[in-house]
Image 1 (cartoon, rainbow, N blue to C red):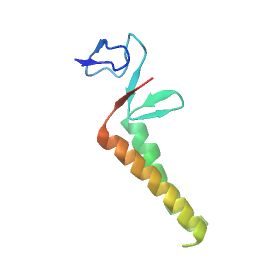
Image 2 (cartoon, rainbow, N blue to C red):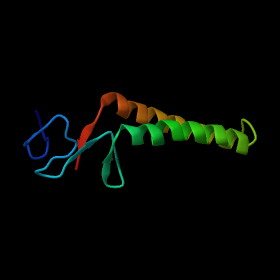
Image 3 (cartoon, rainbow, N blue to C red):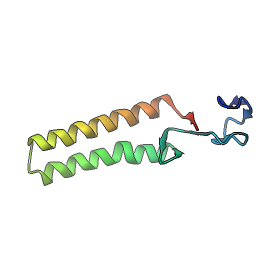
Length: 92
């Protein structure tokens, strides 16, 4: 059993929600909710790759705007990969 870091009540290792204080366990905190691994992979890894490839075609090659989009996508990819590596954390 694990402890909730906010209220210090015991929570099962399989629970992603503290029944005492309402804290949530997840990989990302997005729009007021903790999100799981599937959401993190979809929005932080698959979406930036798709946007980078799409912008390569829409911006017609390796232009400066393409490199801006590519940099933003790489940062989002790196942040999401980092969050997946460290595992779920508690949010409130």
